[in-house]
Length: 515
Image 1 (cartoon, rainbow, N blue to C red):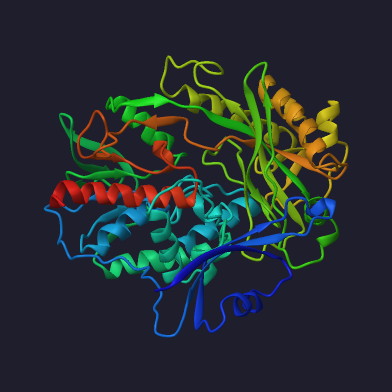
Image 2 (image 1 turned 120 degrees about the horizontal axis):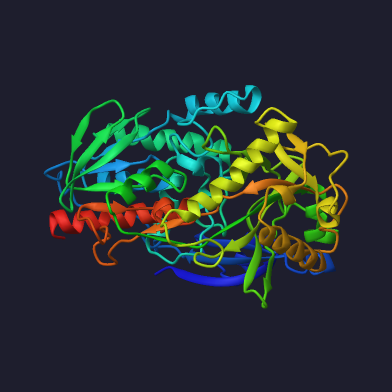
């Protein structure tokens, strides 16, 4: 029987030497988890790796990873999955494992064509409302750094990681802590997943939008597409992402139960990568530790406001990623190598439903986001061309000065100098200033003359939760409607969205197949 053991090694210690010394005669080993702990490296403390290793001796076998899937056959009506992001694709994938074909509807194009639309926006300001950083095959996850970090506890997390490896992700994706595919690699993986689904008999419709979800009283009956087609099904999965605002408005009209939820708003901060690496690694900065990450938090006890870093992209880029022609939003990404000269992170302040915006209308959180995004766009039209991002040196933001000059940046659509106080609500700007002063005490040098802030970061999470049953995963108000993933308020990243897609697939299987 195999043996699983946990231990720590200095970053420069040889793993196999340790195993030979402590497990003499072993035949093979497999890594279950590997995590770098570089806390204190900037104070001279040696970084370490935390390992979880499975070791076998001659005649033993590794414990089985693979699940077994019984062929269950199709549903009476193919389930319809709205959205080909991580939640929608993994929902379809899990159904296909059991021989259940589905229909996936995606408003945008395939990933390689989607890239052309995005490049034309960044370069020529030709905006496509259905093919952008949020919409199209792969969803927003295609441009979110390819991070597979998650804090959720679910048996399906390992399934998701293994599937990514099956479709071409590096083997370590299945075991390293905080795995990272990079936006360049995840595009190829998404194509392989959709090609696989087609081979399994799934139908995938691109460049067409669901205009209406059809109900027979409170039972889902199908969808009406933007090209006029009607598709029937008694199982509709809504995996539309957090930026499909038309769908939120439609659900409100249909009286689908939704509630406002908290989210966060702020900026992207960008530093030179070499500075962040040094601030985190200190004298170990030239060791092979990879581009450095950070996680920073600040809490104001007087007003119960939190300011924190989010979606940190070491060696990455800041992208203009809006979904409205008259709105600007920023997001971050990095490729697999994480080798750009810059590192960036969202710095955001909590926005509380009922406190920072009224809950009289369930969509007021959306309107709150939209107002900020329009202000950024109007400033860009006034001072640039509408695609460039409002930007301010970090020190100038703290001192209330408009930046006279700006350093080079990673942002492919360009930047322009502007006071971010005129874009952000006062409580957001105040929370950022307080947080930045706190972060500089935790990472001395975080505030420096070359650091810049780009705004606004508004799409941190969905502004609503589409209420669903904990037992059946169906909408609390409409049977056969399955709110799923980040847009429904049940996920916060690629992995958790994919896991939620798997959960919804299993819920439908339990209902339709009574298993």
